[in-house]
Length: 64
Image 1: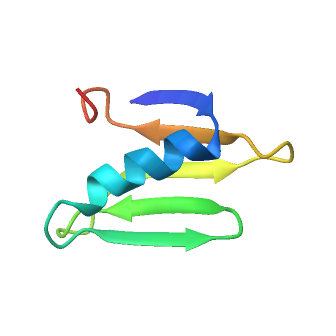
Image 2 (image 1 turned 90 degrees about the horizontal axis):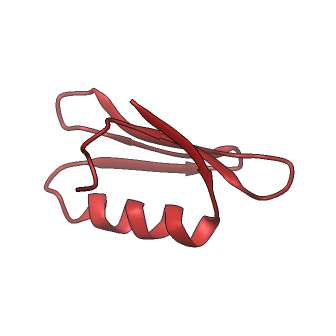
């Protein structure tokens, strides 16, 4: 798993790329966003911190 801190612009770009896949579930909330594979497995999560930056977690080779 890859974990790192980034800004909202990058998170939105990553989520936009994942939304192009068929049948993925994207859920935005006050605390961040997560994306689930159609089989129910979580493949991406970004949690917003107090400074507005996001802690992102996803499988290592998801964005290659």
